[in-house]
Image (cartoon, rainbow, N blue to C red; front, side, top):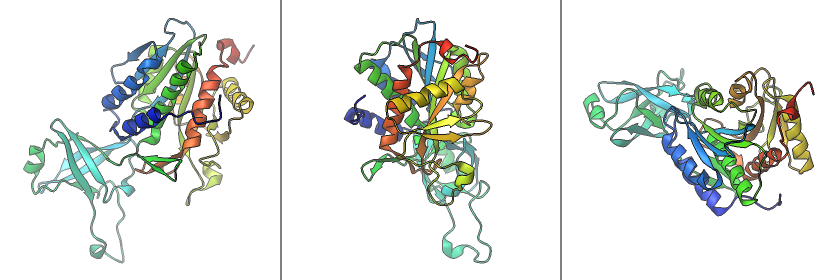
Length: 362
C-alpha cells in the first residue's frame, strides 16, 4: 500500500461523530447505527444480535470465515441512590475511574432525554488538612442543581439511569487523537476502514469476512462471547488498545515498554495462536509496517480470549493500539499508529488462505 495517509476527510468526520456519540455498555445501539451506516457501502450484508453486536459481512456464503473485531462500548456509571436532598450516588458500569470523577460534567440518560449534572467535590478550603479524604465510590456524588429527590425524579432520573461523560473529540499537535471512548470505538473505526480499503482497492477475498463491532467488552467480553457462537469463525483478528507505558508513574518492568507513535502492538499470550501471530509479524516486516511486541501473560483481557476459546478453538490474534490515559476522558493515540493498525490488518487478510495455514500439525 502507499505510504501516504490512508484516512480521508470523510473518515475523520465519521470518527469524530462516532466518538462523540455516547455508547455506554448495554446502551450501544445509537453508536452501532452510526457505524453500520458508515460501513454499509463496503459490505454485502449485516448481522445483528439480541444485545446489539453489529457485523458487516463480505462474501456471506463462503464456508471459511474470518473475523476482524473491535468493541463498541464505553465505560460509564449507573445511578445507584438518590438522597432526599437530590444528590446522586453511583456504581460502575465497566471500569470507570472514581479518581477522575470529581468536578467532571456528566450526562444522565433518561427517557425524557439528557439531564446534565456535575460530580461535586468539597472545596480545598473545607477539607481536613491533616487527613484529606481521597475520591472513592462511597463518597463521589452527582449534583443536578436540584434541592429534593422529587425534583430529580421529575426530570426523569431514577435508579438505573446510565451516566456518561460528554467530553468530545479533539486533535492535539496535528497527529494525536484525543477523546473519551477511544477504548475501543477506535477499534470499530479501524476495522471499518479496512473494509473501505478492500472495497476501494477492489480486493476479492477467498473467504467470508465478518467485520464485528461487539458490545459489552468492558464488563467481561460478553458481546464477543455471544457473537462467536453465532458466526463460528475459523480465524479472528481482534484489535483493542494497550497502555503507552512512557508516561509518568508506570513501571515498564511490569507493564512492558510500549510507546504511541512506534507502531501497532502484536500480542504474545496463550490465547494468541502462534502461526496466526507469525503470519501477522511476517506481514508487518514484509510491508515495512513498524510494530511492537507485548507479552500479556495468562490472558489478554480483550475479546481475543472470547474468540480463541469458543467453538472448540478459533485461531485468534491481537493487534493493539498504544494509548495514553486509558479509562479517562482524555484517552490519546497517535494518528500514525491508527493508520498502521489499519494497514497491518488489511495486509494480513490478503495473506490468509484457509485454516490449514494455522494447523500446528501440518
